[in-house]
Image (cartoon, rainbow, N blue to C red; front, side, top):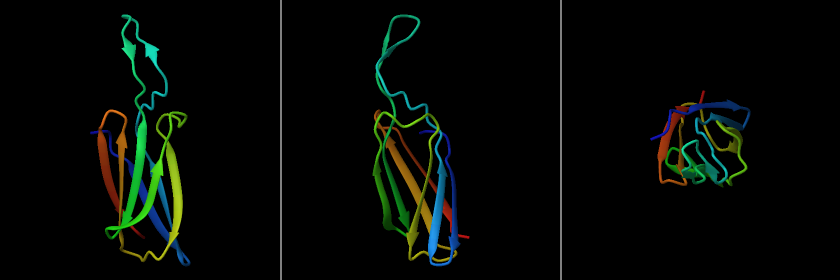
Length: 103
């Protein structure tokens, strides 16, 4: 399991803005280490978000996303106190899921 994400969700007017800082190395290409072993790409592939268990986000990342990516999005229909859950899966099958509440 990866390091914890920083997830913030705030309501302004009728929109809820979710800001996420993900901790991941995001190795996007084949590389060789100092001992001559081949390192395969290792990056976050899929990010999903829910608000009170209802889907609000589904994103597929490619290998060009930077290390420790910052990601934000807005959606309508959220209320103060709603539970936002953000989950990701990387190319090695590692997963992480964190939550925040709308303020």
